[in-house]
Amino acid sequence: MVTPVLPGAEPVDLPGGPVGALLCHGFTGTTSSIRPWAEHLAAAGLTVKAPRLPGHGTRWQDLNGTGFADWYAELERSFDDLLGRCESVFVMGLSMGGTLALRLAELRADRVAGLVVVNASLATERRDLKLAPTLSRVLASVPAIGSDIKKPGRTELAYPRTPLKALVSLQRAWPVVCADLHRITCPVLVFRSRVDHVVEPVSGRVLLEGLAGGTVEERILEDSYHVATLDNDAPTIFAGSLEFVQAHAPAAAG
Image 1 (cartoon, rainbow, N blue to C red):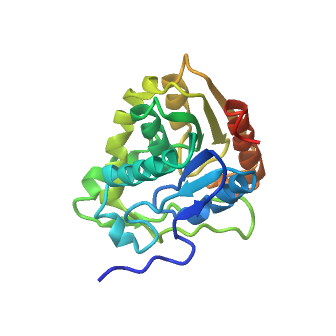
Image 2 (cartoon, rainbow, N blue to C red):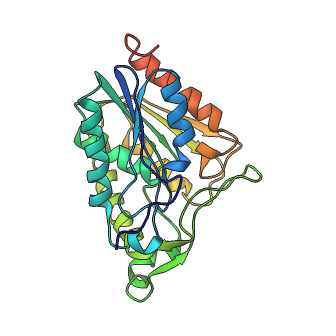
């Protein structure tokens, strides 16, 4: 039996002009965490798409039946769809969505016009997370990581548990993505929360080191936790990413 999609977790597809923006949500999260971002870009005239990644937006058990290759394939399908409708496409992502966006910019460097990532995950120094491969043999899940938000009363539509097999798949993708960061040729805008209880500072350091020599700018978010696109700094992310698009596609984005 097919598990119903949770209300609010549906894919986003907002028609607009010749410049496209592909947005990607994070691990155990849903499109609800990036929907306001998508709507802001669409209101400015962009064609915006945000897929629901396989295993997400239903029940946490479904996520353990998927992995990084499945999530990437879905993102790439959406990218190709936008390429068929737009003159240029920018790719943006939150958390693991940022990791997937980086991978897309590595493998499709000739077609990605620009990249915006928010608290992208690329590494860990935490001992408990390093034990995930071992724990996944005996446990299906561990406590949730969702709703790391500073803003009072704001919550994220995310799973109540963290599926371990899926987490291990993400962790195994990190060194692959990190090793190929030098392949990214488009301009990159990096948003990073000063305080993040999910993605550690090491991810930010690894990212900037890997992108050294390219066109990259990091902006620190002082008033948000991990899910910054739903937090106090969301307007900064929305406005900054739109300005980034306009700066790198000035003829088409107004």
